[in-house]
Image (tube, rainbow, N blue to C red; front, side, top):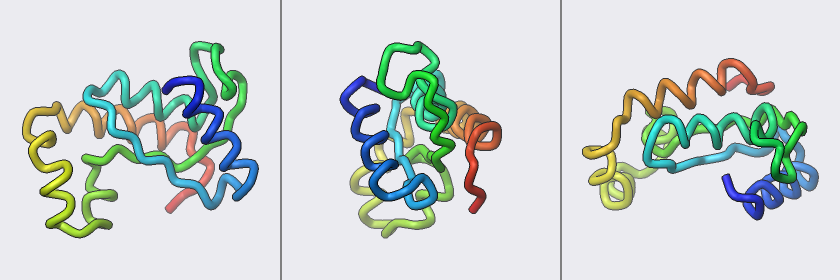
Length: 109
């Protein structure tokens, strides 16, 4: 997650409260998705950005996770994400993000 997005997430969390924020990520591979998820829950693991050492504990999901997929219009999902879902390692992405969420998320659904 780039430094500008870290700044935005931090500012929005301060403004609206962590309990009111859900982060949706769309990284194309599990490792990148896990890094982004870790950044918004446990803090920037690279210690380079505004979230370095900041544990927000936010709810975070990837766009291919069932929780997100079930929450949106199926036609829109298919149009916007369906093709990518066929070429991504969906299981790897889901496992990475769920693992981080289970470990660091302060808010249970």
